[in-house]
Image (cartoon, rainbow, N blue to C red):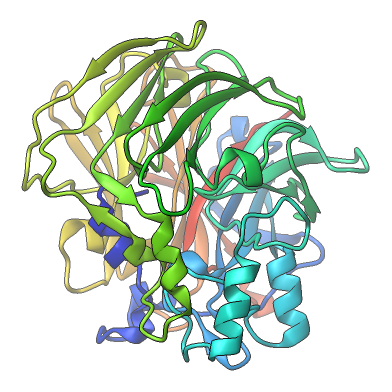
Length: 468
């Protein structure tokens, strides 16, 4: 999701605090209180491929941007909300939506106000001194149920079950080392912690994007542990989790001279590849959150202009040894035209030519905030194809579902949510796009006569769960 340190500090501040007109982009940052207790049948237009039947897409992202007397000023602080589209057949799709009923959300509901915590942005209006001190205490690393647990960025399938064993349990995650369980069908919320992974002892920084070792369901991720609150140094560790296990195994550890911010990393069948770029997080900065002038955790990140390189670590998955350290030259001024990069999951970790991405206004330099598109780029031939709708905005990540009868790299469909900016109420609907032609094959939305609409605020990432 982040391509540069400056991007996440600046780009996702909420439009309400900025001078942009009411438009498609702004409509994604409105609170949606709607929750569905039972799946709702949707209207299907077009042809849904047979291989989608029995699967579902579950998105994690925003649902609320404030409560009571306070609002959030940054999208990363929004109350987490889950949205699910279940493809029950080629002509039947149902929809469910629930807030992540975290301790943070539940307590805020009881208070009818935002539970004081240290946020990525700054709450508006600013907490008084008493609540600022309380916010600092609430935000301390904690392995208990009663900690800050607004995990609104991504979902991952570690092969777990809900506590009663009735359904698959996904884990809601962010770039912190914490987890909350989510029932894949019911969207119920559950406390979860790995047996031997602790935010109080293993550090507070991780990635919202674990990876499967290609060809397996073994998950790999990292965590970074600062030496202490005032030191710039820390320790980097990588761990594996066997599918279905409630424990992890650390296979690599190394001291690092600074706390590098990494949102993601790469895996091949044999190696983990990490980019230690020049975006650094200073944990001691959080101590200043009690001051009235505090501007949010986003201002605790910095880009070190004095450094002219990014260190790339290539680490063996089997032996945990550093195979290579690369320090490439730094190319300044490069503009990256799309975000949320996506490839056919059958080609992850292997040689491929085709990558997909969302060309969003803040990535493309648009000042209109009126449309978005999904782009298909063949990096081997340079061919580009796009799917675009004027006054419609793709929201959040997409899922690539391969066609089981095709070996082509672009054989399959892209599943993505869109916001309709032509109606003024920000209705969200789902589109199925042919990954080869970049043409729409189906649209899914609420049945008109029921006078209901899906209003889905900004979504970060989601997951495709295929038929079992």
